[in-house]
Length: 615
Ligand SMILES: Nc1ncnc2c1ncn2[C@@H]1O[C@H](COP(=O)(O)OP(=O)(O)O)[C@@H](O)[C@H]1O
Ligand SMILES: [Mg+2]
Image 1 (cartoon, rainbow, N blue to C red):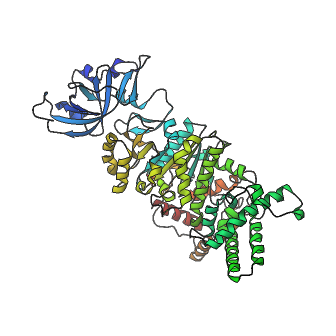
Image 2: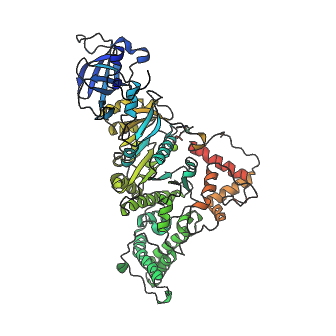
Image 3: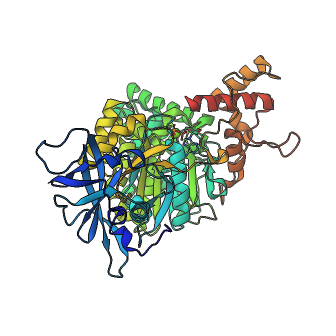
């Protein structure tokens, strides 16, 4: 029979057409009902756990999911001649709208009565459930129940109430995220997306729509970091000596005020010492200052000291800061440290695509940054995203997507950097007020701060074997939906169970298949054996040492300060990391090419990186 949208069939399920229902209600308790199944439930009509059934209850069709099927009768004396009993959880109902058209809504307003006929949900009904009218939806996959039906999710609910993608490594989380984000970009051109890519795997996934920021072209001036973040960088995550903290916290506001004075009085000779009480600058105010100025302040303080041991403190601090400033791996923070220049607005624009220039998504590649600074960088970026939303009154909605979220917001407070957890937690709790939304991805949901995950209204659960992770999931979804969780350990790659606000009803589906080119972590054609052909081991070791020291980046040359610090190298870096096409030898010099190492070494190292990412 041809599919009819406006037919009565939807409200009178197959029962009235075939004259034979699969079963009848034999008991009802709360939102749970038992259906006595007739023999027909075998074959094509197999009633199995996870399938939906429709119960005709007067004018309505009540929709429920089978959570258990057993062969025994519910009780021997009960009426009917059923051979098995299915327990179902009622989830919603199909009713007739004011325009006469049937539509699906969550929750049930009427309960079934004993004897009400039940049947498998028909295709028309499933379509109605998954094609909600009056909502903006995106299609992200096919239902496991019937692969001809698309898994539509409510894009506004999905974004504005935060979401999380959970599952073990290699089950298709990143691919799923690529599907979700690509569809969001199509449905909501107003949304900007910022993706924290911990393994540099998304570089090619969004084609021309993405602005790829790599450690090679990142610029985050040191003065944007809060005091806590800056000291975390300076002391490499170890606790800082109290004396040195005191010196810094006193002198940084002075350096900031000094900088303001340089700006306002061009004649530097007449300069008076900056007075932070007048400017109102604190250690955390995101205004520029000169690192050199801070170092001079420390130096002149030191000169005035009589006490030798306090002089040592000052000296040690200066040494430490000089070292970091000169370390090429930290160039992204200290590049223009002695030149100054306020690039905050420009930076926000580039990072969060405020003027998207056809690239509404930013991919922040973190692999390659010194490990000691990643926490501080994540904290800074999360904070910038939230604060921009706050100060702009949410005028520019931003979806902040964080891979490996458990690393930056650990459930164990001693494990992760407090400011990065705070930044994520603030977005989770208050972000939606200011148009800042969160998408979290993690393979260890049980290790993620539970207060953050509890703010995610849509959950996508993929295969997960760990008991703790499953327990967490169970506590996060409704009782009826929890029945679906039994499938979580056995899901295939790319299969997912969706719960919550974004989904009409909880359901298992498979994410859309991605083209090879769009797959995060392209590893096509990789063998586990490295190709050493044409590579001299000695040159290879030299290249590795240069990478290690960060001296290879010196070849990049000065990155122009304005106007778009990200554009020039993005494509090249991205292609390098993703193993894409490389400029031909003899063409414009590739900024990332290490002169002493041939293309073969680069290939080898790029391959190795992708091998690591696969683990
Ligand atoms: N939607 C999909 N389309 C195509 N291939 C997929 C999809 N989901 C998973 N895969 C396959 O599974 C592999 C692992 O997926 P990935 O998304 O990297 O997993 P995770 O991020 O969970 O570690 C991919 O490299 C790809 O081969
Ligand atoms: Mg991944």
